[in-house]
Length: 435
Image (cartoon, rainbow, N blue to C red):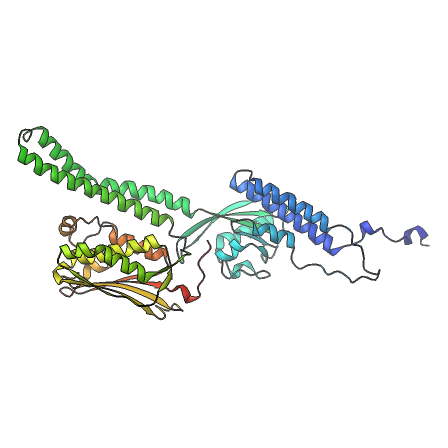
């Protein structure tokens, strides 16, 4: 016979409450993610501790017994599909974070993760957006063992980027309940390492010749030409030219290194490419007049907005127009044009083309594919005679790549050369990469 005491209604504080349970789970998950991020970063961020406290308080506030429970005249509350607490906390983490269940289906993902993986959707398998076998196998291993691990994830489109993915179980004492993936961006660190190595190699190679010249002239001035005023003046002029060459070389190397460091960061500002071209034509007009070259500019009356860094695009226009004036001066004129065009090589939306045409001796076909390589010169003697460092077109290529554009070179011997930069228009409807 049933004991009457067993029929006593269950106290409200112990009754099942879907909202309370979901909130508590969200608070626990959010705290776990914040602690994991703190451990990965290697320091105790104050804002991580603050949001952890907020998550716990929010969880317990939402978990309080409701004034009306099912069966007492109130509407039955519905269990939320996603924890608002976990979602809010994840949104404050600047690095990509993804939570998946035991089937590797995405439970939560912050904005940084969705920007990194364009096809990432809540409720869909992670493999739909991320097809890296190391990461997917790592998830399975963590689900089976419950021990965290690190794997490396790289992508090459639109630019090369590298991440260290930290994978950990949501509950270390209960393997198989789900995992959290934290993406740590290693791109800047890797680029910095490569920049240092390239700078040392390039600087040591290219600076060797002018340094040897300077040392030779100094020894001559200290010896046989000590009392020869004419030789001293001539050697000092040559030494000055060699020193200026080294200064230009170091400036170009530093500029190229800075551009490479930010190659994975797409510009977000809007600038007028026509005004940039007009400004550089005006700046280089005195140089063109000295060399007997006329610069003819065909620029649109309306602004031609593109997403870009104004200083870097000014550098592109300067390098291309200055090269055309110096190396194509025998043609007598240089044409600079900015024009709107439609889709470019399969890309949707309007584009803007900036082109520079000279009518000099042109470039042999075998040199065209290598002109954007560092220190590559079609004519070494002519390049050094005109003060070139061999880095101008390499800088142009890297800037255009960072702007998600295209750089092309067309030339025929005896008919001059045409250099064209194509950039997506700002009204193309393509949002800038927030990463």
